Amino acid sequence: EESPWVVLKFGGTSVSSAANWRNIAGIVRARLAQDLRPLIVHSALSGITDRLEAILATALTGAPTALLDEIEQRHATLAAELGIALPQAVARRVAELRQTVAGLALVGEVSDRMRARVLASGELMATELGAAYLRACGLAVEWIDARTALRAEERTGRHEKASMLSVTCDFAPDANLRERLAALPGIALTQGFIASDQAGETVLLGRGGSDTSGAYFAAKLAARRLEIWTDVPGMFSADPRSIPGARLLTALHYDEAQEIASNGAKVLHPRCILPLRQYAIPLHVHATQTPDLAGTVITASAGESAAQVKAICVKKNITLV
Ligand code: ADP
Ligand code: ASP
Ligand code: MG
Image 1 (cartoon, helix red, strand yellow):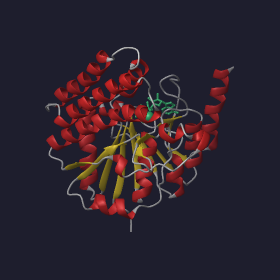
Image 2 (cartoon, rainbow, N blue to C red; image 1 turned 120 degrees about the vertical axis):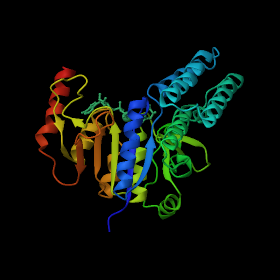
Image 3 (cartoon, rainbow, N blue to C red; image 1 turned 90 degrees about the vertical axis):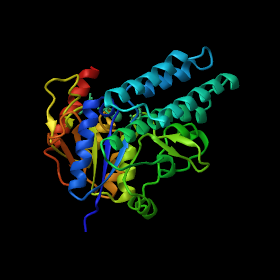
C-alpha cells in the first residue's frame, strides 16, 4: 500500500512573497484533495540567514540593532502583504533573538552553540509566519519544532565544529514520528535547516541544508515522495541563472542528481540524495512561481542520458580554465 505522506519543502525565495504563499496554499490543498498527508518543511525568508551571519560577525564589536530591526521589518512587511497581523509568536522569536545577541556581547565570544541558536531563528520566525498565513487561509496547521524530530548523529574529536553547524541526522523509518504526525488534527509544518543534538541543543544541517531536512523527514515517514519547491522549474544541465542555454532535465537517476549536487549546484544540498536513494523515495523539483510545470523527477530508474550530466562537468571545466 502506498504511503499517504508527501513532504513538501519550500526554499527561501518560495516563502518570501504573497504570490508564492498563495501558490503554496494551492499546492497543499491539491495534495489534500488527493487524500495525501502533506508535511510542510520550509526555510527562512531569503537573505535572512545571511543577515543573521552578519549579526554574528558584528555582535562583539557593535550593537547590530539596525540588522535586528531589518529582520523584524522583513517579517512584518511580508505579514502585511499576506493580509495578516504579525503573529505574536514571530514577535516573541525576534525578542528572543535580540536577547541572545545582547548576551553574546556580554560574554564576549560567539560559541558554535550560540551561532547555531542565532542562525536557527530565521527558520523559527519564518515558519511561525507561514503557519499563521495558512491558518488564515482556512487550513488547519500544526507548527512543529523540527528539533523534536531530527536528531544529530554523534561525532567527536576534530569533527566537533561540524557537530553543531553541519550535522547529519538519523533517517531510519520512524514509527513514533509517523504516529505523532498522523494523530495531529491538522497539517504539520516545520523548519528546514535545524535539528537537535544528544544534549537537546540546537544544531544546524549546514547552509542550504533545508533540502536535506526534507529528505530526512521523507525517509523517516517512508513518504511517497519528496517535493522540493524552489525558484527554478527543475534541475538544469547548468545553472539557468548564469547559462541561458541550460536545458531542463526532466528525469534523472539519483546518481546524476547527486553528481550535480556534489559539483556545487545550489539547487540541491549535497546530502539530500542519500536518504532518498536508500529508501527509493522519488524526488520532484518544481518552481513555486509556476506550480503547473512538470519539473524534474529523480528516481532509481535511468535518467534521460548520462551525457546530460557529463555536459555540466565539461562546462564547469571550461569555466575553470
Ligand atoms: P532554495 O532557496 O529554494 O533552496 P537555492 O537558491 O538554494 O533555492 O537553489 C536554487 C538555485 O540553484 C537556482 O536559483 C539556480 O540559480 C541554482 N542552480 C545552480 N545550478 C543549478 C542547476 N543545475 N539546476 C537548477 N538550478 C541551479
Ligand atoms: N536558511 C538556510 C540557508 O540560507 C537553510 C536553507 O535555506 O536551506 O542556508
Ligand atoms: Mg537551497
